[in-house]
Image 1: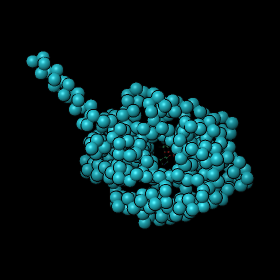
Image 2 (image 1 turned 180 degrees about the vertical axis):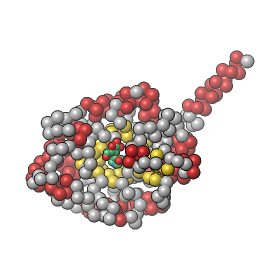
Image 3 (image 1 turned 135 degrees about the horizontal axis):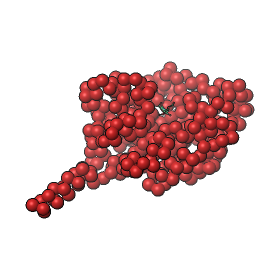
Image 4 (image 1 turned 120 degrees about the horizontal axis):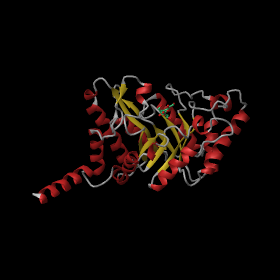
Length: 337
Ligand code: 9MR
């Protein structure tokens, strides 16, 4: 009797530990890409959270603490603490850290001025790049250099850097970043840029192709992939886009993945969400130039979605109580194969 119960406990423990004996992140690694998670500052100091991150990530990124407003609230004070803590946690657990983001139109510091001359703006840009990339040389190997540089119609977004420096602000940032740390992988990150044939996606591809042809250092393109079950999803359009980037030697990161749905009737959308998550991980496994799949958070509790899209949520693979959802189990099963 005692023997039977010990055996059954062992069996249950074995089954619940893993269906294949591999962690989620090792399954992804074997398929050729890094699985990752975006983290709120200090969240990983909670041992229960740390356990989930360790199971699921070989790459981590900060949700906010590397942005100007958080890192440099004024001209002279740099808040390195949150970044340093994240790097320490990552180092201790065999993970890479990705920088998000050097330049963006949101979450900027008040002292960034639209009245700057081109020279003043270039000097501010250079100072930002060299201060960060010198400090973290060899520690941070991948940077989102510019985030969200296009409008939906494919024209360039008129952010403060565009307005003060001009359209060449991106190549200036890339050149300076490469000069500061030649080993760092330099990415341009964007949303709604995953489908070949979409105006923004095509504009971005042509822009990056032109940079490559002119010898400007650029290694990768981030496709944020904040998806919504109400939008159409065509796997083939994403596949074609990934492949054209492979042809010009550009890596891809699925950089901020989540798939939101209406929260009033989640059961109606869960199957669709599962298919789309699976499709993304399959695309990553199938295409060697897809280097990472990073989810924007891990649990529905901390997700940015309900704040920005009232009535939408349920977008991640762990529920609000930190429990694995069926979608997580389905993706893990695929990664285990
Ligand atoms: O998840 C981030 C949220 O906590 C911030 O309030 C928000 C502010 O703009 O930025 C969110 O992250 C964004 C990311 O940096 C760039 N892509 C879109 C993400 C969701 O808004």
